[in-house]
Length: 293
Length: 213
Image 1 (cartoon, rainbow over the protein chains, first blue to last red):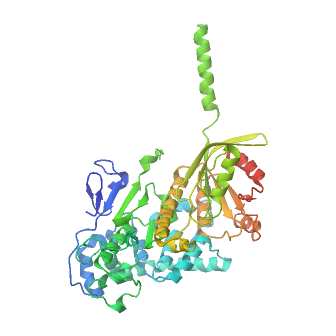
Image 2 (cartoon, chains in turn orange, cyan; image 1 turned 120 degrees about the horizontal axis):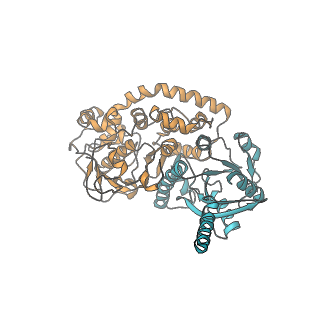
Image 3 (tube, each protein chain N blue to C red; image 1 turned 120 degrees about the vertical axis):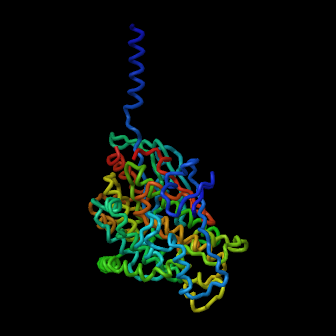
């Protein structure tokens, strides 16, 4: 029961759509995400192999196909891909240059098809590893321009990415699962001394490599992120990952670093209006707008 | 009877008055961060109502919540249009707090700004879906317009069949290249302007009256 209404305490299953229309009990639209029952494995070894069994214990979290209905299997797989060099940010732009029939229709009809430009861009953006990459990515996102050549190339890459996506997803399943929903460490003592920034629903993509390191730090196994790994960290990362999986319209790649799937954001009636610490978030519901659709 | 008739007449006049003019159209000012959306919104609002809409800044993502200025009546060449202006947060596909660090911001503030900006983008996209009747799309004419954000948003706007006015802002800058923007969106008319300096605002108002009336 990972989601709880903060008003009346009603709990919701992972991926429940009920809450997207507000709490059926009290109408509340503020929910708190609670990681599911953790399997305390204090001496969790650092090897990925050991994390797999845990993954199977938590199929609803780790299995892509059981992912919440709002999360697309392909996408989540791609999302957890740490460094998939599939496409440029520009690639997304060139995919939808047409307008008219456009992205919106496509998105509405084919939202699950994982072919929206932003998805591609997400894959590209899974470079949560070094700041250099982030800088350029961020720069690109704001103003990067694509030359016709780049556009062509990006188009090819998008096509490639689409065809590769499934296999990527499969290959990523282990690490994905590890990172996502299986806080294997002892259930959190609440993060007391940790940097508040760390809670900002962030670091979604970092966990894969860090998580196994929680008890026995193995230098080589954590190439991606340099932050000291603690139980709190792993727990929060798992939590962030979980949220990312549910709301793929916004991905949090690191504290203060977000990637947005514009089409997905556009496409949803409900949306998150407040990303808060410790897994809390507020959903604005369609009904609140009084729009008749 | 005469009294009733005149009463009825006056009621009719009142209701006619109420509904004669249509509801003001809600016009969203969209565009990437730092294109000058708020500067434009403020200029329009100041020119026609005397008030401003919100603070402007050279730091991207200054506007992180949509701000509305209602009932702005613009008259040009006998055309009159009353619009509600919605100044929306700049739309980006990535928001990174490090960008704000370059503007002498503390990390904590930058991270918070980043989160708020992200929420702002979500809000802007939501407005686009639900709540706008037309779009003023503002681009910085010193930047290359061929970006994914621009193509995606223009695509959405077109698919919604919303009237859209594309503005090439910041023509007061030397690097400004209006033609590049016109070339990027040949299916739309591009209006050059400097919202900051007030250049070519006459044409902007003319087009607003034309497009959104």
